[in-house]
Image 1: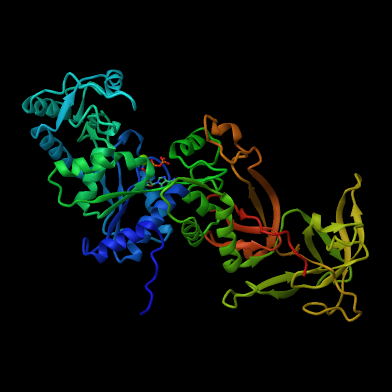
Image 2 (image 1 turned 45 degrees about the horizontal axis):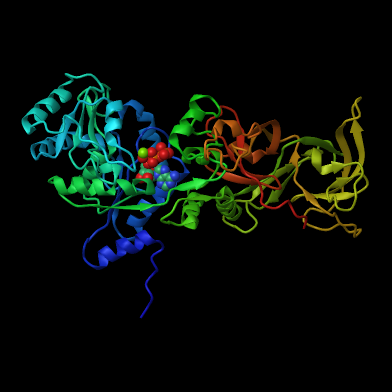
Length: 551
Ligand code: ATP
Ligand code: MG
């Protein structure tokens, strides 16, 4: 007997068991974002889970916008969310769905609850309602409006719908149990008056269902079999089930909860991310320092790395904080294996090769990737003047320094070995250029005199290169838990999270770098072309794991 692939997490085991027992013939999950911001890394976990389970079990996953609060929602978020889900590599079943497309049905069902005596219009102000709700230790009290007749409630609800009342004048509540130990069951609100235009339904409605009334019913309408959400909704599950029991829904989905993803040195709350955007701490939702999917994309992360990360962290029944180093590991690992190589010099220092003819240039070749023949080889122009990094030259140094030193040799990667003769300085005594010589016949070979180079450094031909800006990113927060307890996350914003290098040089092929390709700039890290800057700009995706080791 061959061993079947082991279910990878507790939810997959539950879903598989439901298929095995015949309870369901097909799994249907959904990813239900509210379009009130861009998706963040926590959403990536939910996407990978919901779409991943459907994929693994031959089912389907819907993308449904939970658009029940028009005040905070916008079309730009809908567009961005669709793009992010697609970019992660997932396809939703059929068309995108909207909670708002079910508003007619939800309204009818609310009327049905009223007719059954299971819902009533309540005129308590929000302060009064809070006082009536009771506390965790004390039961609530019945609203004085609780015993209105069905006819009266239907008429009032109709008036709410018609816009006859002001916002906040009244709400529709389920009639459940004001003494329930679960506060969610103490006559929860089903509908509120909001005199707001909606991005999908325009001015058709001025009452909107709240999350609890909408969510389960939407799941049922769509035939969702397993409604997977984060742990904070566990206390809402009895209400989710109560509503399904009391309404003529076409199917009975079941809710399951899992632990949300929190990442250290980050905040994963749309509200806080929106604040960073609105108050100008970052360059919009796609700023490469943001933990948004769009930010990671702009920074050069790959969908494969984000998916791999979500697989690595697994799915648990408790909340936890994941070390951002794990995410960084996932992207480095992917880029090390797959990204094309290139050379770039961040702090250019000119080297004049005095024995190389003034009028001569040649084209040298370097592999696209050390282990991938399928990446095309690079053509590297070479001439009398090249740039190396300022940090790669010293007039004197001890043996540990395996770069260019006066009187010593170093190899220019994929090119000649050179030997330094003289440092040229300006009036302030700063080194502005170096004179050196090539050792003839050393491209791809060791010198005939037997004096080898100790190190290899990157370089760029001065006569034919790409010039660009480089943006070096660091973590956005200096505190590992920027929003824990009563901390204000704005207090620990890292003032050095972005360093701009505006005169970097790179090999000329980078002039044609495509957005979406992340390169390894040898000895510097991984970089990708910025998708939004009008000029050539490279974003550092992530540094190299180890300090560069000389070979
Ligand atoms: P936020 O708290 O950032 O506003 P949210 O839960 O309000 O997030 P929704 O748009 O309602 O955002 O989320 C869509 C789905 O993504 C929900 O099913 C939600 O449970 C899930 N989700 C949101 N944040 C996380 C997270 N940090 N980890 C895992 N899943 C998450
Ligand atoms: Mg939400």
